[in-house]
Amino acid sequence: MADRGGPPAAAPLPGDWPARPDLSLALNRMGGFDWDLGSGLLHLDPVALGLLDLRPEEYDGDPAGLAPRVPLFEAARLKALAARALKGGTATGGAYFRVRRRDGSLRWTYTQAHIRHDPTGRPLRIIGIVRDARHELAEAAARSDLDAGRGRLTGVVERTAALLSRAASVEDVLDVLRDEEAFGHLGAVGVVLGVVEGARIRLVAERRAGAYVPALQYTRVADAYPMSEAVRTERPLFITSRDEFRSSYPLLWPHIEPLPVSAGAYFPLIAQARPIGVLGLLYPRPGDIGHEQRDLLLAMASGIAQSLQRAMLFEQEHDLAEELQQAMLPRRIPEVPGALTAVRYRSARLGRSVGGDWYDVLPLPGGRVGLTIGDVQGHDTDAAVVMGQLRMALWAYTSEGHPPETALARASLLLRELDTERFATCTYVEADLSSGTLRIVRAGHLDPLVRRVDGGCEWIPVAGGLPLGLSAEFTGPGGPGYPVTTQRLGPGETLLLCTDGLVEQPGIDLGESLEALRQSVRTGPAALPALADALFDAVEDRTGGDDRALLLLRRDGPS
Image 1 (cartoon, one colour):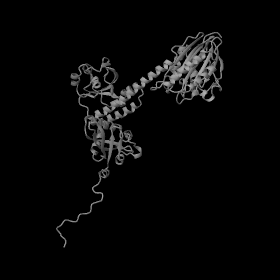
Image 2 (cartoon, one colour):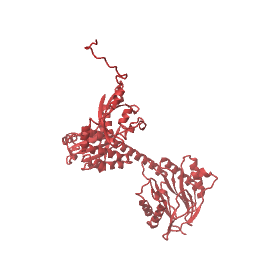
Image 3 (cartoon, one colour):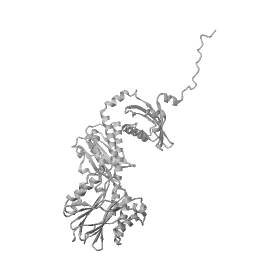
Image 4 (cartoon, rainbow, N blue to C red):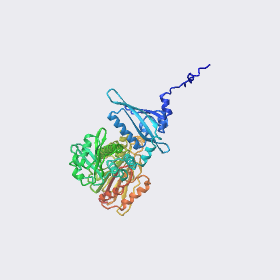
């Protein structure tokens, strides 16, 4: 008989028992990641990619590839948490964050991580898991949706980031601070921005509540001001009461006392490991700023710092390039017996770009004068250098007595021999001021324009050749050169030479622009300098990225 009191026979165990850790994680929708701090690469396993709604082919290990799935305000908060953990030597940590799915919906996710250090304590890797947290955070999600304050702050960060991404100058960055949609929801009654200049801080912008005080436009980094302290320590500074303003910063207190200010937050603007400025926010109510709000403000300050540094570098580089370009232009225009001249030049400020436009007036023997205007291809310092070389070459060739067609052909060959891969357009006019005879050659440039004494105004059709550099490439030194067109300029008549920056603009037919310029010259002021100013002022607000150069000559000699 069977032993009825014995235990039942044990069932056979599954062949894969116990389950492997990766199987346990996968079945419970837990993915893994490994972030190598040295290389910056972030590995995500298939489950983690699925939780982030990313396909394997959409992600190459660069954390920047997560931008479509991790909203900006969540990324800023996670970045701040990671930085705080790394700086404080924390070994483990976790955080909830939201993921934007392909359909645009937001889904709560949780991450838990461990920081691995080398024997010296330097952090090497962050290894952890990511899991679905939709159900456990239903109540927290509802509370977050009702938290209008947080929504406003995240909106500020997102809008600020969008505006800063388009900032191309320091003034553009300052305009972000003045943007009501970006900063109007911060709850601050004052926003101030200071730029570090050596051992002092210069206040460059303020908005609201009279936060700007002329006496504080320049302060020293060593002074006992909160902005100075934030720069010295390179750490954010939070002031939570009026008493703290009064006791800790007596130099500032007389300026704060009449304002509706009871708290303040000051953030150093750090770029390339050094403070370049400081952002100050003044609040009407006392109290501490929560960690989440601090993290968002830190992220915003970081974006302002990067944009401010980029804009400052762009402006410095542009100024240097523009100085080089100006040095390549004539330092003065010589007086020409028998004629009046006027020149104008304006660089289109586009970051670090400059152009290769130039003009020149060259006195020649026998009462003659050479007039040159041209434009080297490109918008950089190379274009400015090539422009200077061409201008001096034409000056040398004409001074040696070469006729216009020969001078232009030699300049074209020179440009080809410089091996710059650039070409240039140019119009050269040799004017005999005693007879009014004009001998004109053109290399791919605009025709000259003449205003007659009877009120007429017309473009002079000039037989042209290829741009300088291209003519030497396609025809060689013995090939076709530049045909000469002969015209006459009567007493009191005005000759206009210009570059295409004065007429071309995006979306407008060139013929319409040329006709508009002709009408402006025809009806413009009689005085030459006033006419030059009027022509430039008429196109001041045009969009487009080209420089503008203008040369006017009026013959005053006998017919």
